[in-house]
Image (cartoon, rainbow, N blue to C red; front, side):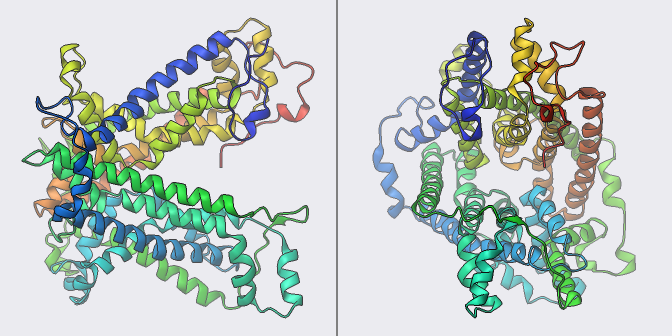
Length: 606
């Protein structure tokens, strides 16, 4: 018996559904409840604070919609909004253009070292924004690397300005546009370019009149992604707080809740503005795509064959300069400072030292305690998020559960909403006196760090596993069901071995990204619970730059090693000689109507 089909997304709309409606509905209902707690209620309380300041937290809270219009009377609110929009729009144009230009270069000519562009983009994408921002601060400050090592004291005024911050954010966030454009350049229909060439168009004219218009969806997607990410970024203003005054919406939200005097109405109103701006950006993006057709590939389409460059050395030099600019300056500056007695000592041989790394392992080291706590939180978040993401991906791919539109929408919302806003929502929600009366007051507990980490990383875990699950023939699961296997037995013995690679990839990705979650830990960590991002930021603010950068770089290497070990161990535990479907000895064997191609081994998710 097959369950009735509910709302479906993507290619899964035509896929047969799992049987046992009670099991699938029960699982779907549980997942909806989890997402309501993790995402729905926190965002609801954030929005409510904009018109009900102090709702449930103060005895005299009331309906005050006029707060939303007071931005014209409050200079801090105005400055935060204007600065955030300036930074986001500037980075959208500059970073979006820079990333798309590099992607077009990457897929237009072949030359030695062209693949480095991919590696640099991924390193920037997984690096915490506040650590990259700290590297730029160390490079450009009056007593920093540029002034003391290279005598370029003119760099500081350029960097610590609105224009300089736009450049920094563009160089940090351009990988979003780079990857979006690169994905659209892997396939090509040469007939369009050939027709333009026969009409006398030169290479630049073909690029301007043919290739760029056809790439419009990817170019717009990349620019919007840069805008959204920059608008909600908390790392840059946090790193700049002691060097340059530039209030933004995320930092003002943080200050309203975590600094004295606490002002819930400020946090609620600014969060409301931030969510509305992000929603408008996404709506504009969707309307642009729906107004025009961009499906230009035909049966003549093929993978792009990149010709060799006429001047390979020149393009290699350009690539090296790009990598030195986007990675060499921030990470190189952090490395130099971590190995120096004093940033003012420059590159003098006597200034070299390993004492900052030794301090990490000293007795009672707060950095080591913070790293231990953060690694433990990240491991817990990775396990819970991967399991929850697996179950959500199963519901979205194989079932006809009617509430899966809400499940999919919750994941999209969690991906778009900045971590600082979600963390504020947790404060508003879990501080409610009614929850304390029920014994459910979790504010001030590390449990909220886990909740926030799961909510933030869940969209990534779901997306990483959806692609692998879409390749699994539903016949495998139906065969197991006909043999009497329950839903979770089918998932464990049939589905999990097949998609083990994607599950492990999600586990490693979530673990690596959760260790340096600055927004959640800054807002939600108990005072007595030291975490690595907060400790790094505090030491940096105190002027202990060598110790702060040593802790960040050491832990980054440790996280990479842990992720590699987790990936290898996970593959061994989840897929010891993994079959590609039910085999003799598992829940059931494949039915006769399963196609031969469905029994081939599935590769890991790209």
